[in-house]
Image (cartoon, helix red, strand yellow):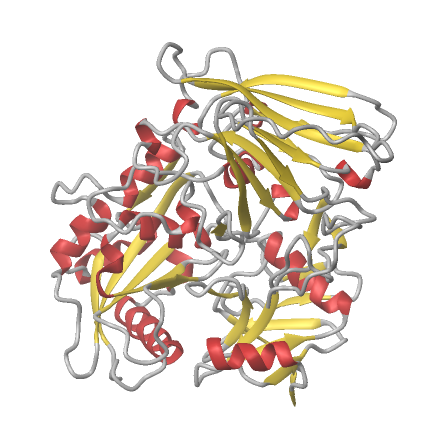
Length: 547
């Protein structure tokens, strides 16, 4: 459910687990066998628990049911609106107040749905066959297995299987299994592929491979090309919902291989000839999961591949300067900027980079820093050079790649330098500028992010009443940008926390200055605080919340 800085329903802290704070911005749904998404409701403690399990990686998409849920008619107008635009049912599924018992699903699953996103319907479930997971009212969980079900894994070797789907009437993508293998894995020389770009963006810490695990060597005899299997499903794409199609593909492939996909592969990509029912998407994926689905030629684009696998790894969307554009941040692959078969050299924005680094993945946390102001501190000035992710391995002086602006709420700000070369040379927006990103979940886990500003040399961005403190402003100024003489290139920025000047009564008007290109300033709404978490200027009128 969307919010805006001027909305009347603020983002707020709703619970704390494992030293992480989660925000109340998600909607959950139960995906039924007919493709309906029935909104899940329950007491705050039950809903908090689902968020905990999502963000802690204990629930994996598209695998289980919850026992004891009851269906009721929904009186919630928001859900009724969603049912018309997104296939959400006008019914609701109520969580039980007793222990939540999750079981492997044969036909439907619990789904976490980000209603700001049209391409990812994110189901949340446990991936252990025959091992129920139960929770109690205190928010703790117990499980009959010791296996770690967290698929938000950013490092090491991850195994990928691609399924070329053939329907009951012979419809399949025109590309052969060999071509599909080349487009995704580069097995015939295609240099622009997600395998190479994930390796480059992670600086060698993440390797995706089409080679199955030793325990799944029997898969090799069923492949039509390296990493690609063909599966004929007993239904037609022309008149079947996408939930049924996906379930049929899973069943056919698992029967063919004699194993469970979720237990033997980190990511499984389904490629359809075309969408005929419940369309309006090019690809979609499940958050913190293993499955993604592509229709038409969208699978060919490395940018789309990295976007959807990014959802599997618990990354949210990246919105632009206009908060109605949910994919509008084209400095980040989670903003859907690259629709090209020949371009792939692009990575993620500072909020996502902080998420990688916060778990010690991809980027060393020592290359991120926190800017945190307490009420006791009167003034503070921080001046730093920051380098882009493209120069992460060319940073002998240890300059930060991300500066986090701590707000004491779950929604923080992230400052970075969008260096457009090397691994990021195909960047689509704000080349070699400083970018300011807003994101929730303290930057630690899944969250929609928003691009707030792109700043060139000499430009500033001001937060009024930082952390809700009257007459206290935080000003970000870009002093210099050097990408020609310096190696690595850098942006020199100053963060200045100052006491704002008093307004005088009836001040004498001054003539307006002549327009100048130097030192422009971008003014922001009041920064979030515990007392004013939406960052709304108390003197401005309330505006309706986006829905």
